[in-house]
Length: 466
Image 1 (cartoon, rainbow, N blue to C red):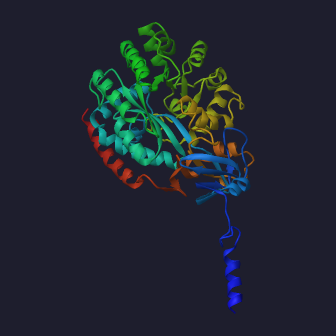
Image 2 (image 1 turned 120 degrees about the vertical axis):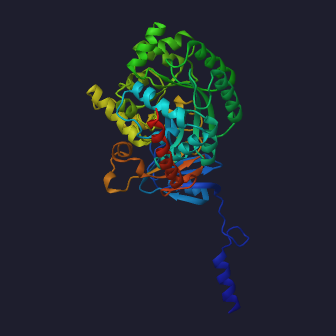
Image 3 (image 1 turned 90 degrees about the vertical axis):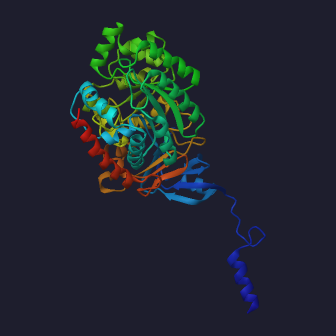
């Protein structure tokens, strides 16, 4: 009996390593994602693929059988029936404006800005406002697969603090404008704020501090030149609205004798550290100039449609070699949501109808704009935008198993034309899940929604006293 018991114990524990335990020489990583279709955006899609992640970085990408033979992890995500894509990059927005969502829709841009938004901001925006607005925006972005966003607003140091706690990646541009803003009442105080902001976040792994002169028609030539010098000195990027409306083109042309992009080129403002939002009303010569200067551009189709601003010449810009990203713009009056998947669908369909050509831009093209294209435009393509070893593990997992997405002949087509942000089930930034199985892990959405309702009452009251 004792001999039988000994044999059973030996058989149960194994002896492959000579010490009574089965050997497992696979490399230990923090997280394994396996079973779904991996869209690397750096090469062919990998059906039944897997990704190994350690210390926030992608260690390996390949067929699931191969990856799982080489790596093991205590934490695993089964992505069977799903698409695994690089996290979406919202390359232009004004995140705290979630608290102004729907305040003054169906108006022209100048009417919306001057008669509603600027007055509402003057009376309501403070540090606490932007913190709550950022939390509300973060919940929406994480739920819809955005892992990186570029912001232009006020109190950006407070936004940065919230974003870092929540775990999103962001390029945060402190707005600089030629009239008193909610945070800085003079240009001199704005410059001082920017210097301190950039210094505080210069080496942050998730936050890239930036300067954000509002637009060529709201910032003087002298101040644009100061921004240019300051950005070079601080080695910080510049975010700016450019050629968004015909009215902007008219104003700049009357004052400067040339169109907005040509004007910025004439004063030596443009460079590879500049990210131009909208870039709708560009001449062919200006497109060539932006390409030559390495300027990143951000297409905002839903905003451009809602404000009737025009249609950017996206195919020509991409053909010229411009890094073109995709953005939602602010979630108030110009779009009203931060869903990058719906933005991709709008981008593709808008170019098709305006050109009368269904081949004008493809599902793959807009998925590229929303991932690696946005990363290039923001100067982050060395870190994010593709799923390949060495990149940071910023990932979105999209469920394609529901009736509304089946059958799947093309994964890119299914994502762009048949899903919405509600199909995103898991969102990961720097290897850290921010949402898993549709459960938010780093932001209290219910608290943000409750606070948004409080702000609505106060904002409406403030506008009644105009």
